[in-house]
Length: 390
Image (tube, rainbow, N blue to C red; front, top):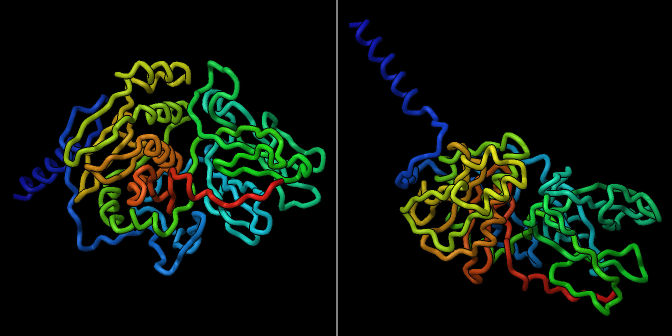
């Protein structure tokens, strides 16, 4: 009997290994899975402070130190967040802080966050930008484009990042980017204005320079985050079933980035799962060849609706069933494709599945949790401060 029992145990272990073996070919279509809630499940995302009423997108009153329940594959050390702050005393002056998602500190308030490459990438970030601090007033910063050093004329180099997009015609560079204009005061060259949607023409500013980067978002207001917060426990249930890993190298990262721009789903139906394969898109294959990542292209795909719980479903970007970027969002709801792609970029950068929702007051905006911070993608009306002339 003992021999028979031992045999049955070994047989069970062997079957379990076979069931969990990971295939190395493109997956066959599967039906969606429903994730059931657990009585022990509690949301570990940042929750709002009911008494907080942040202005101009400032959610510093919120708990932003929490992390996503499933943990992170590891945030990218190459693509970092850069926080743009506006001066409280002189709202026609801005400053950039490296590797920060919030720059509320004495005299400064967070304006917006952009993400950019900290190291040069010949295809996705070929152009340098030098950020300098004033030697006379080190709280002031300035941008100098197309250079890696800016220690001159009263400035010291603070840090360098690399622009995305095509600043000039460059067949080797990816065109994908976000951008902001940087105005420099004509009579006060130590003053920089980097304010979204601002037009400084005839207001004392020199012709602006254009800074290109990967993505842009801002801190969510209390009203905006309430579009997402009630459903966070449901998002958490799905996140626990999505193990994200980091891309093996820069080439794989570029290919996944390109695949994100193949996302064209304006409406996701609940409980319906389907795949989109990169190999079926001539545009994606052409971009993969340009970006020298063709070895990954045949195995890249994204799956919509693999996991669902209540009204929330999933989107996952994978190579051979290994997930590198993912988000969870409401199903049966129209979504702004453009901003969903930016959220997916943040998932790829942070190594976390990101919960997101459409803003209830403005369906052109998305609210998400990015590495523990409530973030809003889209929406120009919040940038409405009166900016004094330079």
